[in-house]
Length: 108
Length: 111
Image (cartoon, rainbow over all chains, first blue to last red; front, side, top):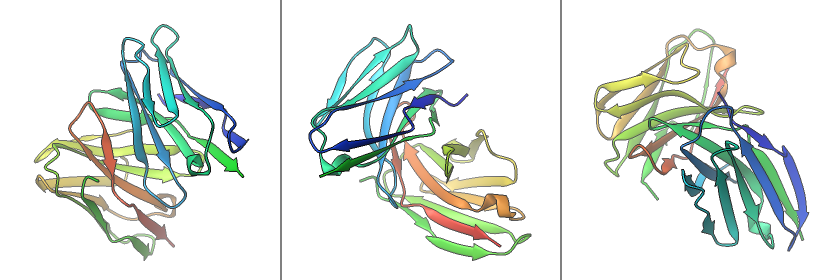
Protein backbone atom coordinates (compact mmCIF):
# COMPACT_ATOMS: atom_id res chain seq x y z
CA UNK A 1 0.00 0.00 0.00
CA UNK A 2 1.25 3.44 -0.95
CA UNK A 3 2.67 5.55 1.91
CA UNK A 4 0.94 8.86 2.49
CA UNK A 5 2.89 12.10 2.34
CA UNK A 6 1.91 15.41 3.87
CA UNK A 7 1.63 18.17 3.03
CA UNK A 8 0.95 17.81 -0.70
CA UNK A 9 2.63 21.14 -1.40
CA UNK A 10 4.79 23.67 0.44
CA UNK A 11 5.77 27.19 -0.56
CA UNK A 12 8.74 28.78 1.19
CA UNK A 13 10.96 31.82 1.09
CA UNK A 14 14.69 31.26 0.97
CA UNK A 15 16.01 30.57 4.43
CA UNK A 16 12.79 29.15 5.83
CA UNK A 17 12.43 25.63 7.18
CA UNK A 18 10.04 22.87 6.15
CA UNK A 19 9.02 19.40 7.26
CA UNK A 20 7.63 16.69 4.99
CA UNK A 21 6.00 13.66 6.55
CA UNK A 22 5.62 10.12 5.27
CA UNK A 23 3.29 7.62 6.94
CA UNK A 24 2.66 3.97 6.25
CA UNK A 25 -0.03 1.56 7.35
CA UNK A 26 2.50 -1.29 7.17
CA UNK A 27 5.51 -2.00 9.33
CA UNK A 28 8.54 -0.13 8.06
CA UNK A 29 12.07 -1.51 7.81
CA UNK A 30 13.55 1.32 5.85
CA UNK A 31 12.45 4.57 4.27
CA UNK A 32 14.05 6.15 1.23
CA UNK A 33 13.84 9.81 0.25
CA UNK A 34 14.21 11.10 -3.30
CA UNK A 35 13.98 14.52 -4.90
CA UNK A 36 12.84 15.15 -8.44
CA UNK A 37 13.27 18.44 -10.25
CA UNK A 38 10.84 19.31 -13.01
CA UNK A 39 11.50 17.32 -16.17
CA UNK A 40 14.29 15.28 -14.58
CA UNK A 41 14.72 11.87 -13.01
CA UNK A 42 14.34 11.30 -9.27
CA UNK A 43 17.60 11.54 -7.36
CA UNK A 44 18.39 9.68 -4.16
CA UNK A 45 18.74 11.76 -0.98
CA UNK A 46 19.02 9.31 1.87
CA UNK A 47 17.93 6.05 3.46
CA UNK A 48 16.60 5.72 6.97
CA UNK A 49 17.03 2.29 8.46
CA UNK A 50 15.10 0.55 11.21
CA UNK A 51 16.44 1.83 14.50
CA UNK A 52 15.49 5.51 14.31
CA UNK A 53 18.80 6.60 12.86
CA UNK A 54 18.81 10.15 11.57
CA UNK A 55 20.68 10.83 8.37
CA UNK A 56 21.74 14.09 6.84
CA UNK A 57 22.40 15.47 3.40
CA UNK A 58 23.50 19.11 3.06
CA UNK A 59 21.01 20.93 5.32
CA UNK A 60 18.46 18.19 4.83
CA UNK A 61 17.98 15.58 7.52
CA UNK A 62 15.39 12.94 8.28
CA UNK A 63 14.10 10.81 11.09
CA UNK A 64 12.41 7.44 11.22
CA UNK A 65 9.94 6.40 13.90
CA UNK A 66 9.24 2.67 13.62
CA UNK A 67 6.51 2.64 16.25
CA UNK A 68 4.54 5.34 14.50
CA UNK A 69 5.45 3.87 11.10
CA UNK A 70 6.48 7.24 9.79
CA UNK A 71 9.42 9.25 8.62
CA UNK A 72 9.94 12.99 8.44
CA UNK A 73 12.23 14.99 6.17
CA UNK A 74 13.58 18.26 7.57
CA UNK A 75 14.78 21.00 5.24
CA UNK A 76 16.65 23.70 7.12
CA UNK A 77 17.41 27.19 5.81
CA UNK A 78 15.98 26.31 2.43
CA UNK A 79 17.74 27.30 -0.78
CA UNK A 80 16.34 27.88 -4.24
CA UNK A 81 17.94 24.59 -5.31
CA UNK A 82 15.70 22.69 -2.88
CA UNK A 83 12.68 23.26 -5.11
CA UNK A 84 11.26 20.07 -6.54
CA UNK A 85 9.03 17.15 -5.68
CA UNK A 86 10.05 15.00 -2.75
CA UNK A 87 9.10 11.34 -2.60
CA UNK A 88 9.38 8.90 0.23
CA UNK A 89 9.61 5.21 -0.56
CA UNK A 90 9.08 2.24 1.71
CA UNK A 91 11.16 -0.82 0.96
CA UNK A 92 10.07 -4.45 1.00
CA UNK A 93 12.12 -7.23 -0.52
CA UNK A 94 14.13 -5.00 -2.82
CA UNK A 95 11.09 -3.11 -4.06
CA UNK A 96 10.13 0.45 -3.27
CA UNK A 97 6.59 1.74 -2.92
CA UNK A 98 6.55 5.51 -3.31
CA UNK A 99 4.28 8.11 -1.82
CA UNK A 100 2.43 10.52 -4.07
CA UNK A 101 5.02 13.25 -3.58
CA UNK A 102 5.26 16.66 -1.94
CA UNK A 103 5.87 19.67 -4.18
CA UNK A 104 8.29 22.11 -2.56
CA UNK A 105 8.70 25.58 -4.04
CA UNK A 106 11.31 27.98 -2.70
CA UNK A 107 11.03 31.64 -3.68
CA UNK A 108 13.77 34.27 -3.38
CA UNK B 1 25.69 8.63 -11.83
CA UNK B 2 24.82 4.99 -12.48
CA UNK B 3 25.13 5.12 -16.27
CA UNK B 4 21.53 4.37 -17.16
CA UNK B 5 20.12 5.17 -20.56
CA UNK B 6 16.61 4.77 -21.88
CA UNK B 7 15.44 4.61 -25.45
CA UNK B 8 13.51 6.10 -27.02
CA UNK B 9 13.25 9.27 -24.95
CA UNK B 10 10.00 10.28 -26.59
CA UNK B 11 7.47 8.24 -28.49
CA UNK B 12 4.04 8.85 -29.95
CA UNK B 13 2.08 5.81 -31.00
CA UNK B 14 -1.46 4.75 -31.78
CA UNK B 15 -3.86 2.67 -29.74
CA UNK B 16 -3.46 -1.04 -30.34
CA UNK B 17 0.15 -0.99 -31.47
CA UNK B 18 2.90 -2.81 -29.56
CA UNK B 19 5.62 -0.66 -28.02
CA UNK B 20 8.98 -1.64 -26.54
CA UNK B 21 11.03 0.58 -24.28
CA UNK B 22 14.64 -0.21 -23.54
CA UNK B 23 16.73 0.39 -20.45
CA UNK B 24 20.48 -0.08 -20.55
CA UNK B 25 22.87 0.11 -17.60
CA UNK B 26 26.65 -0.01 -17.35
CA UNK B 27 26.93 -0.50 -13.57
CA UNK B 28 26.35 -4.25 -13.38
CA UNK B 29 23.53 -3.73 -10.91
CA UNK B 30 21.57 -6.88 -10.16
CA UNK B 31 18.15 -5.26 -9.83
CA UNK B 32 16.34 -3.32 -12.52
CA UNK B 33 12.92 -1.69 -12.30
CA UNK B 34 10.32 -0.11 -14.52
CA UNK B 35 8.09 2.63 -13.08
CA UNK B 36 5.44 4.83 -14.54
CA UNK B 37 4.84 8.34 -13.29
CA UNK B 38 1.48 10.06 -13.55
CA UNK B 39 0.26 13.27 -11.91
CA UNK B 40 -1.11 12.60 -8.44
CA UNK B 41 0.18 9.02 -8.34
CA UNK B 42 3.87 9.42 -7.82
CA UNK B 43 6.03 6.57 -9.10
CA UNK B 44 4.36 3.20 -9.46
CA UNK B 45 6.25 -0.02 -10.01
CA UNK B 46 5.31 -1.94 -13.15
CA UNK B 47 7.77 -4.85 -13.17
CA UNK B 48 11.18 -5.53 -11.79
CA UNK B 49 14.04 -7.95 -12.28
CA UNK B 50 16.35 -9.43 -9.68
CA UNK B 51 18.64 -11.16 -12.15
CA UNK B 52 18.93 -12.33 -15.74
CA UNK B 53 15.63 -13.96 -16.72
CA UNK B 54 14.27 -13.39 -13.20
CA UNK B 55 11.38 -10.97 -13.20
CA UNK B 56 8.33 -10.26 -11.10
CA UNK B 57 5.25 -8.06 -11.20
CA UNK B 58 4.79 -4.73 -9.53
CA UNK B 59 1.59 -2.99 -8.54
CA UNK B 60 0.51 -1.90 -12.05
CA UNK B 61 1.66 -4.76 -14.30
CA UNK B 62 -1.51 -5.36 -16.34
CA UNK B 63 -0.90 -4.73 -20.03
CA UNK B 64 2.89 -4.81 -19.66
CA UNK B 65 5.51 -7.49 -20.04
CA UNK B 66 9.26 -7.42 -19.49
CA UNK B 67 12.32 -9.36 -20.48
CA UNK B 68 15.90 -9.43 -19.29
CA UNK B 69 18.26 -11.58 -21.33
CA UNK B 70 21.43 -9.72 -20.26
CA UNK B 71 22.44 -8.03 -17.03
CA UNK B 72 22.65 -4.65 -18.72
CA UNK B 73 19.33 -4.60 -20.60
CA UNK B 74 15.74 -4.57 -19.35
CA UNK B 75 12.93 -4.28 -21.88
CA UNK B 76 9.39 -3.14 -21.20
CA UNK B 77 6.73 -4.08 -23.74
CA UNK B 78 3.25 -2.70 -24.02
CA UNK B 79 1.55 -5.53 -25.88
CA UNK B 80 -1.30 -3.40 -27.25
CA UNK B 81 -0.95 0.21 -26.21
CA UNK B 82 -3.97 2.03 -24.77
CA UNK B 83 -4.48 5.72 -24.01
CA UNK B 84 -4.33 4.93 -20.28
CA UNK B 85 -0.71 3.95 -20.78
CA UNK B 86 0.24 7.47 -21.77
CA UNK B 87 2.79 8.32 -19.12
CA UNK B 88 6.41 8.96 -18.32
CA UNK B 89 8.31 5.72 -17.84
CA UNK B 90 11.40 5.53 -15.68
CA UNK B 91 13.87 2.72 -15.45
CA UNK B 92 15.90 2.33 -12.27
CA UNK B 93 18.70 0.05 -11.14
CA UNK B 94 20.11 -0.98 -7.79
CA UNK B 95 21.58 -3.75 -5.73
CA UNK B 96 18.38 -4.57 -3.87
CA UNK B 97 18.06 -3.09 -0.42
CA UNK B 98 19.57 0.26 -1.11
CA UNK B 99 19.76 3.20 -3.42
CA UNK B 100 17.96 3.09 -6.71
CA UNK B 101 19.40 5.05 -9.61
CA UNK B 102 16.96 6.37 -12.16
CA UNK B 103 17.32 6.76 -15.89
CA UNK B 104 16.28 9.96 -17.69
CA UNK B 105 12.77 8.70 -18.52
CA UNK B 106 10.72 8.04 -21.65
CA UNK B 107 7.68 10.13 -22.42
CA UNK B 108 5.10 7.93 -24.16
CA UNK B 109 1.94 9.27 -25.75
CA UNK B 110 -0.72 6.86 -26.98
CA UNK B 111 -3.25 8.46 -29.33
